[in-house]
Length: 139
Image (tube, rainbow, N blue to C red):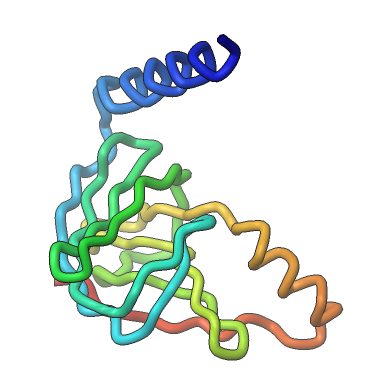
């Protein structure tokens, strides 16, 4: 019974998230990501991806070629100047984590939360090795 209640609440929360009108720019762009990467707990293979904002607080990242995709929460991030359309990844050794999405329409972008694994990698380095930022253009 508890799992049914949880599933119902999860679906209701997702429906509310999707139905809330957004003042955030509705982006829909494509990118060719040349490496495997992670969004939250989800590992995604290299390939051609479509990025679309679902609401001001959610984004979908999907690949028809790889039959892969994920829905992630985001928060608005501001820069000092207008940003070009791009995906920003944090790289630790050979692991990539999607960190930011900029649609190129101004100084506001989307920040994805750090996953548990990314936080563990940061902690294991004791702050000695910073994440390398890798940029992939959106088009």
